[in-house]
Length: 320
Image (cartoon, rainbow, N blue to C red; front, top):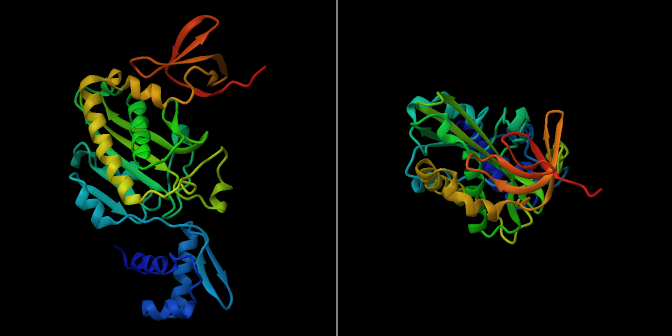
């Protein structure tokens, strides 16, 4: 770990209790000058940590910070685990090193400077506030074997969250995770290879744990986080469970396809049986959601009958 992050983490550990800590006290504890403390505080704020300062009182966190226990994470995961305080993108790291990896290897970072969501959207990635995770997987039969994979990943995430006591969580097709009807997590799957031969892919997951007001203002859609739960899930435990659940589910998917997850999808699908609107560019399709087919395409009951669509963005249809 870089020395600057050792110091920054020491400061965060002192502020974790939520009460004010003076600059003098921090300087004494860290064995550095007050100027050095102020510089580290300013650096943390640049990485998105919301720190409140009051003259004469000192500093305190303006919201919870959840950091991974690197030692515990690596002890409990059999695969290789790459852990960073900061990185441009966990997905980009996995893709860059794909030839060195095996299925199930993961990359985790506390901060992403170039986090991405689906359709080219920016994924807001402040330090220590959320979970940023990517996992490598290889399909020997090519891209065609991966059809419907994103739906399985979404079901895996829902399963883990429910294991940790998170309620009112489900999926909006194809793979957005919603909590109390607002977006909690997103999935970005990227791949390279051939349609009918070996294919490498990375499964990227961003999950909101504790959203600050300043970062909430940067998001252009309804969002949710885990702050309101009876007990905030431990970030390290969440990562361990997620890696293991994905590894199990992807192994089943590789052998049996999406049909093995039909019941899990129905249980998780928030829009099943509801009137929806599907947007595909300038085209708009109205219908009742009737689940998905074996390739992961959404099935809509429209005026023209039951139709399947592989792309697009759905939303609940407003009553006329």
